[in-house]
View 1 (cartoon, helix red, strand yellow):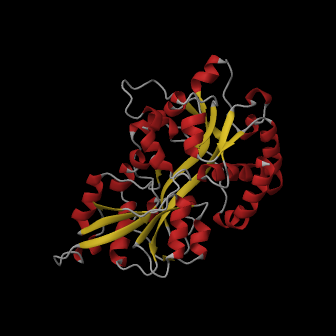
View 2: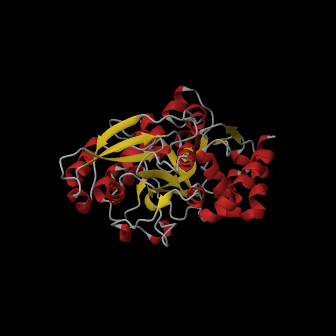
View 3: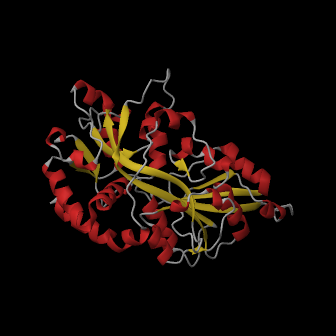
Length: 366
């Protein structure tokens, strides 16, 4: 259960920059298949962060349909993988990059690492997720929300309603209850800061954090420490005797907590404060200078197919970008429905990210 959640989020806790080749099979494009029938071994290389995962059977289906085998090169967390793709753009390590999200997207686009490609099936992806719709340098593949999670048992035992909004978090009744991740070292931590910037604006988010600091927020380096050590509601946190009933994590954390549990409980032991969320979308793009661009295009098409999209939630604990894909029962029964997550344009994030991180560090860590 915790292993699945760890690989789903690609947090800054995974620090080593390594590229172990993981050969697997999969794919989906008829035109690519016609080019893979000459008897030679055809490989398409996917470069990604450490959290990419797909079932063997789904990847084998890609191979059966197209003739291409998928080779996955994993490169640390999302930030590390994007930086490596930028550094190697003159000699790209693969054909497709997966895992750049909206907090990092402008950095990748500004450095010109992607070649335009309009994926088959893109019409089934909501327009609001298509951050580069005009140029098609990247294709939305999945979406998820970073939110405050709460320990249901703690709040029931203390006869206290759990917080539901950012405003709630600075109220006296929630003093010393929240642990979050360092904005400078953690992807979920950064996303939570962006949630406050989206809610309170350029002039208001720092005032919120002053109040949150005064209300006893604890800051740790990364998600692993926050969720599996300090948070009292997770399986790992219980073992570690964590004493914080509020943590910045994911809207998909409750389904992960009950995955494999028998008998299945009526509800997950953790809940989600849906008024605290920030939406992340992950994209895939054809790397400029790819050795196998046709195979890369076929793979991007396949990433949007229902076959891959319906396999993805229980592999990476994210939601499909393809609106025709069905969520597994684990998500529909135990997951939180976030109707209005915070969002910011990638261009605004790019313009302000470094400045915001510095301001946050000076304000909260000193």
